[in-house]
Image (cartoon, rainbow, N blue to C red; front, side, top):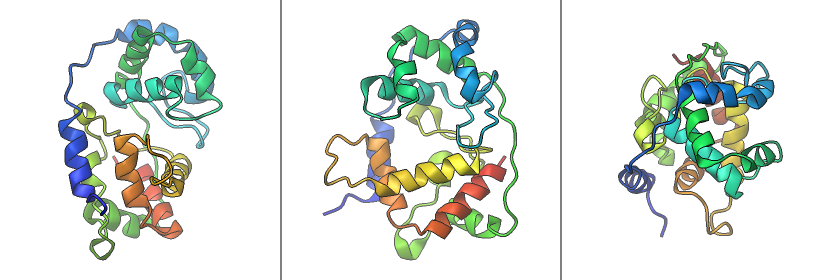
Length: 206
């Protein structure tokens, strides 16, 4: 029997409230020089295939860097970058990007209505939970639960991540991260058009 999306969310949230060490944003700024080539000097990437990090929750950034370093999240570009980072480096980088301000984006007028409906209300007949339940109505995320900020994120990047989650087979990948399990449960029920609409709406959300 599949665990419901709502139960997965509750298990992940209540299991996520652990003490989080504070990073040094100034130290993180100095350490972010290699990251700037892809993510921009202030965390606002220009290339839409690379995510904006500015304003992202520090716990989420730290966790993702850990996952890249440990190989839990596979990425040919990020793996060698994260491999050289100490735990303090990751905390400092997370603090720096969390202190920056994200740049706004714009949504496609053709898809924004569909995207907003899914983001705010889900799709009841498909048992798809509203994105706002975890990522907040304005897309600011939930830092303590390590649910990422989405507002203003490049549509190209968001769409690629949603498609990647949909392609995961949780019956084959036993060590899947709890947060990924939530996203797999949502995306496996979405069509290409619905994913594209969500990505566009999120890009224009602020």
